[in-house]
Image (cartoon, rainbow, N blue to C red):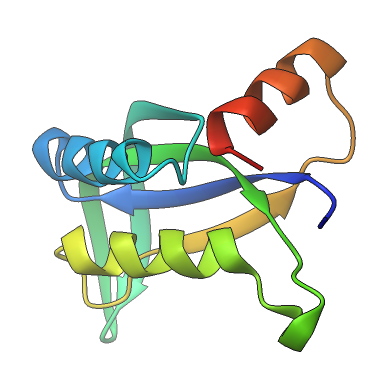
Length: 116
């Protein structure tokens, strides 16, 4: 059986409705144990122009499950596909960070929620 490897995946959405649509899709498919939404302001250069946008940061608590055959990252790939399907951005931020340490009780809860 693959080892449970908890991760945090962060993305951004153009608004709260879009962010919550992404979160619900992930939770319903048991690809996230928890999803958090934060209102933020981002500044960036897009197509040569300096931009400033109100956005919603979506923090997804999930797991990277390494399957021995082909070393697939099952949860990350599925999470990425759902984000891309529900996100209005041409190039949304989607980054994954491994959780190196954490409260054991919380990590066990995450594992149980994800069916890992």
